[in-house]
Image 1 (cartoon, one colour):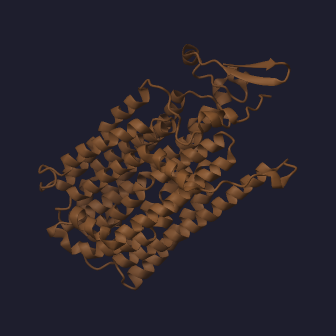
Image 2 (cartoon, one colour):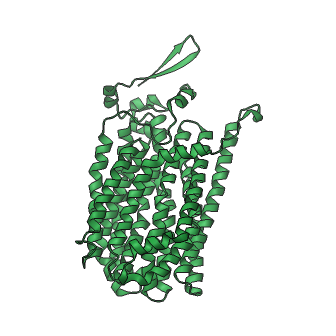
Image 3 (cartoon, one colour):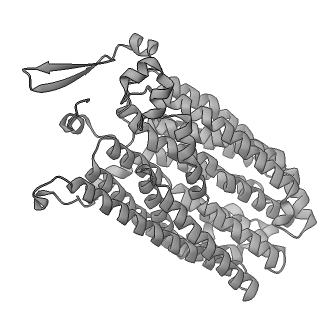
Length: 520
């Protein structure tokens, strides 16, 4: 697969055979750090090589990331549980359905910045470009703060109230508008910090650091539980108290993650200085520029369109059940909370794939089909596990989140649809994240708005939104939408076209300027 040729006794050139027939024949024999072992036992060689991707490595990277991605839905679910148990009347719990959906949708919409940051930092690490990786993290953080402040300002000056009134609330549920608006405005204050927290997590994850995001999430969850109980159960602040507790927890988590990222980058710079005689000759890290931020946003547009389309589907799903009773709205909030609580299975697998794929492709020379197949095999188990857990909690444990038998019964009736939608969603998201890492963001971004339009037409039609069975039918339409995406992603993965550079990969001039270390 690889030949080393000496020219004039000085220059070492690397020539890799790109014959497609040869690659197909030797697909399971990648270029590894131990090529002799690979010729005898390919599986052992892959497991030994730190750059090659395996199911064990995907699992080891994804498990801690699952806890990391639980941060936002966990904070929202804590609000739901505390308000549902201690607030007076069903209106407070019902108000959280539109309020939490709106607040979490904003953060999820902007998660494209974290996704692109993961790919860009991982690509820098794979190309031994520490300065580039640090610049990618800083550009992501700056853009997150700018976008977060803009979104918070729009929400504060009428955007949140207008969206809730037009999309989430109907005449029969008008009583929830005031408390829902209050919740969204308070959560909006911490939106810049929430986006920065997501991006800082992504930069750490791309370097293989899962410990510091876990600690930050633990700090935030503890603060949220304590302050929630004090403000909601103790002082009787209701929905406003829950929002304030979540905002404070977000600030604590963001501060902890930024501190850990700064320490990680400082250690990285020290390692780069080892062996350098003149420390002053080491160039300073580049700073984010307006042009760099603009290029980042343009590069991330396909991912933004994908996330925007998913957000639209989530918003329309809430709008479709807006005419339901207060009990059904509360049940929908519990079902949505369970879905969001376990959907990090998908986000964790996608993030693990994005952080591992650049090294597997660049250093271990593994084929894209091998990388994708490895991730999907590990994803099937997570899909089944997540669906089973969702069904069990929705069917038999709804009383944990409500004291109303009517709400618990409505939630139990949704168990099959919620479990099915989550199982397929996990597979789709991990599939999608791997395709992002392989350079297929553009076709995914172009197809997703079309999917969102079809789902919106189905959910807002008279057969669903105006039906007495709006709650049940809405969730089954959501299941059909997830299933419809599977053949689309498979078609994108099998497309034969000119190769596209993965997100964050350096251009051809940068690659040619990189030193190629000789194999020992």
